[in-house]
Amino acid sequence: MYIENKLSEIVPSAGTLEDFLKTLEGKTIKEILDNISYMSLYNMNKHGVGGAREGSDKDGMDFANALQNFVNRDVLKHKPREREYDTEEFKAENDYEDYSKARGQKARVSMARNKARREALRDGEDKTEEINKLDDEVAKLQDFIDDHPYIRGYRMINAEYDKAVQDYHNTPLKADYLKDDGSEAYDRLVQAFRTIGGDDEGTIDI
Image (cartoon, rainbow, N blue to C red):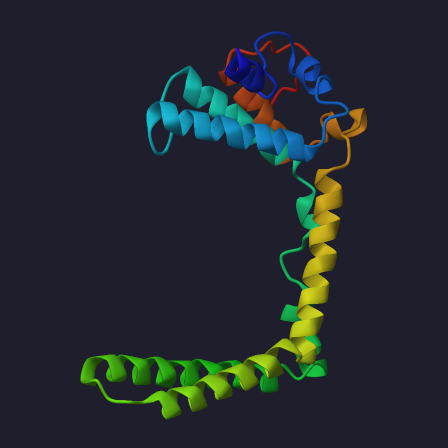
């Protein structure tokens, strides 16, 4: 019963698509995404990795995925593909070249330290002093990286985007957001709805 209730929240069994979308008013995108994740896990447990490949379970999962794309369609407005820290202007202003060199140097020193550790274990040679020296160098480089203007800006921007996405996902859905917006995401939702045997009444013709 619990499983059926969970699935019924994201896969309609009767009525029009508009009727179903109205039931989502007041829910958050996060609640819907969580239920879809639950449904995906349920399908994998029932049918194995990849889920059902045909039948009602596959059609239901296809509808759930189309619903996810529709309700989450504005996420890139809050989390754009290109972030400021990837731009040449931001990198120049925050000495990205120096930051990148430090990361490369840290990787090389870390490899030298790991090699010394392997040799010490293999040959039984005491390399404590060499390893400690390399440890100190790695730590200093890491401190430099952690406090570098580029990484501080990077973290600040990520935190701002993550907060914006979190707010977006946790805002209750309103009726206007759940209507036909003329998007491809809505068209795919209509197609998936028809595949599960949904009532065409009130849906657009595509």
